[in-house]
Amino acid sequence: MFSGKERLNQLGWDEWFAAEAQEKVSEGHGVARVVAVDRDRLLVQDESGEFPAKLSGRFLHLTEAPDDFPCVGDWVCIQHGSSDRFGIIHAILPRKSVLRRRAAGDAVASQMIASNIDAALLVQSCHFDFNLNRLERYLVMVRSGHIHPVVVLTKTDLISPETLRNVLLDIRCAGIRAEVITVSAITGDGVDRVRETLHPRKTYCLVGSSGVGKSTLINRLIGRNKLETREVSGTGEGRHTTVRRELILLNNGAMLIDTPGMREFGILGAEEGMGDRFADIHALASQCKFGDCSHSNEPGCAVVRAIEDGSLPQAHYRNFIKLRSESEFHDLSYQEKRKKDKAFGRSIKSVKKSLGIKRTGGR
Image (cartoon, rainbow, N blue to C red; front, side):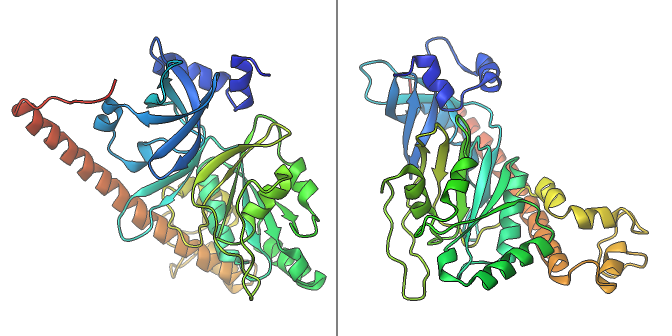
């Protein structure tokens, strides 16, 4: 059995979080890690074990943006007595890293997926699902959130060795230097190599489209069918099963977060991730004649010149332009929305104060 402090350490607690907690955690409160999120339900784990939690009234009153609410992987300041059924969350500790995307639909908002992740396993089926442009999106997203990427290609048993070699060649020709692991969860090939990349007290997440075999891979890693899986369709494509975000503690002490499938997602705050993924284009851009070159039709553009002489693949360039434009548009719209939301929130609080309406609820 683990002691209280050792249990926190097993969950990834370290000196960095301890230093942040000194200013955030009030007397009589403790810390816990969010280990599962299912819609508005939270499950946390602290020194004493696992229990459900809810947000304090003050937290709800002061929090405006969706990405400021707890997500799986967060460390939170919590109040929980031995006789309490629910813990009460009062604050979230700063996040080391984040996995987020632009929320689905027309609304300009970000959606937090998970936090405090050391590495992301970017899972694509090399049968039907493999898409180089989508893989570049994944790389930009995780790099922007300060997360180390590892590419995992699943369902290798469904393709020929030659086809697999071509897929790997396409990845390297696109300038992707991340580690690539090929896996068949059916035969077990490559599963041990994935397991060797997962280290104790570190947090990992699986990112990929629905049905690429994430849950099947997790079941292989933990040695039992903890997560529900469904048979693949007649085309060889899997079917979506994950409906909540959950942190799973593996036998070797590593932690793994499964996430719902993401085939399409918008990118927010991707400037740093763009710089990492498209370092070759950024290096060329430093040689352009004009500092504000858009790399389209300006004279003296080193990027366009590289495309013309064949040293820069056109598909790689087109994806760069597309992701850059999308990120800039969404970032601008998101910042404008945040300003409007904050202004609206302040006006509501001002009206309540003038009417003498007091906040209720919470502890």
